[in-house]
Each structure stands twice: as structure tokens, then as C-alpha cells.
Length: 50
Image 1: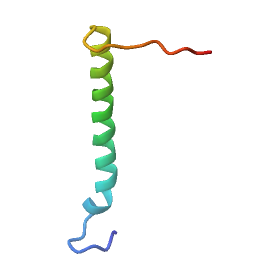
Image 2: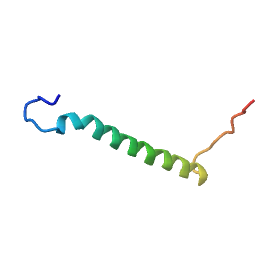
Image 3: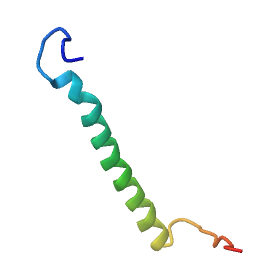
Image 4: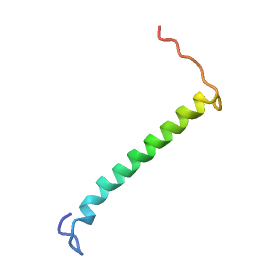
């Protein structure tokens, strides 16, 4: 990967950059879900732990 045309390390950093951005988006999406549940905007059911 380091020897790809164009040199530099942007190509080998791309997967890590993507993964970080994806993780950030996932965190934001999860928080939006939690907020919507707490605001009563989404129906929920309690699951039995037995």
C-alpha cells in the first residue's frame, strides 16, 4: 500500500480515517436513538431478563 502510485501515506491511512468517521457517526446515531426513546418519540418494550 505504501508503494501505490502518488506516494505519500494518504492511501494507507484511508481505512483508519473511514473507520474513525464511521465510529463517530455510529455514536451520534445511537445518541439520537437514546434521546428519541427518552423523549417518548419511539415506542419501546421492556425485555424479560429471566
